[in-house]
Amino acid sequence: MSKKAEDETAGGPQAPLGRARGVWFGLGAILTIGWMIVIPPVVGALVGHWIDTKWPTPVSWTMILILVGLAAGCYNVWAWLERHMEAIKRDKEGPDDK
Image 1 (cartoon, rainbow, N blue to C red):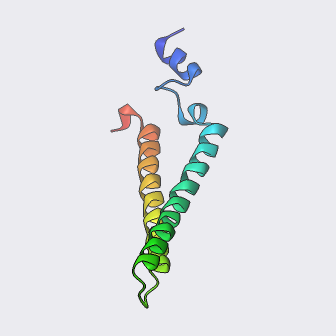
Image 2: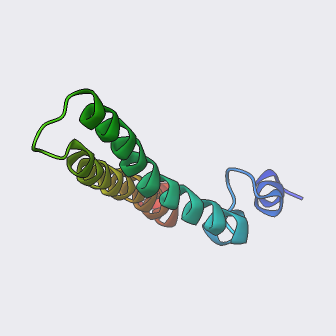
């Protein structure tokens, strides 16, 4: 068996996307995206609540930082998807198509 065939059957670096990325990759991607969206607003809520209790103001820092966290989480997901879509595009093109 050739080296390339061994790598493809083992799911190694030369494996096509269909074989190397299966159900577990998809599940991991979904969980990663979920955490990237959830964590920043939660951190924003905690920091905002701390600011609101330390320095009371008419502005709700909790709400502001939740929205900032949500925007940051959405940006993180967008950037992550862009990187992965570029990698998929490169893998589909292959080394000969460049």
